[in-house]
Length: 247
Ligand SMILES: [Zn+2]
Image 1 (tube, rainbow, N blue to C red):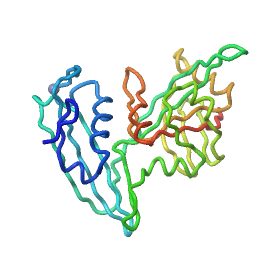
Image 2: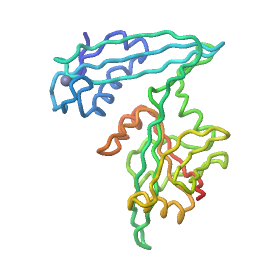
Image 3: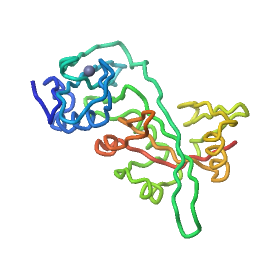
Image 4: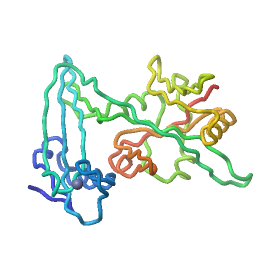
């Protein structure tokens, strides 16, 4: 059983992740803060297990692969890998999102920049005609003017970010339902409560700026405690773009 740092994993994972497997294991483990089996916090150097569930599907010439991971104490669960084959493309993807306000400072004072965070779980990749595995979410976003970013530094992200194509937009209803649209497709919706101070401040900032910064990609760590972009950046799946906002 291979062990990377303190994390044991199933050798068969190499078939899917190739030479990058140990790097992948380290990044996934770094995002976990609690054991998926017992729920207790993880401490440095504890023996851990990586559990991976992979679903393979095929739709004519396109092969799909979803990868779900979790980290447990080794005493709670041994490492493992399950592989499931389904007909057609996987349809059990769930959107996960969050929002925050960045407050960069420049010569004219402090600005409030509204940020939306969006990802899909499990991570969906696909390949055509036996080619390279490609992230479905990242390739859709890149085709609408988003860009890959290697930096998790918000100041640098704000300096480098570009406006996306006008096929992407963010709208909010009078009832506070915020929708993110890409082409004809609604990618996500989040309920805002305009009477709650934090939500009101976010909506005000978005109205004033006329755009929101979307941070997206695979392997985003979104928890109640904050946002961890390290794995996404290291795996080359962190994507950003300025999306027009219309109240
Ligand atoms: Zn545990």
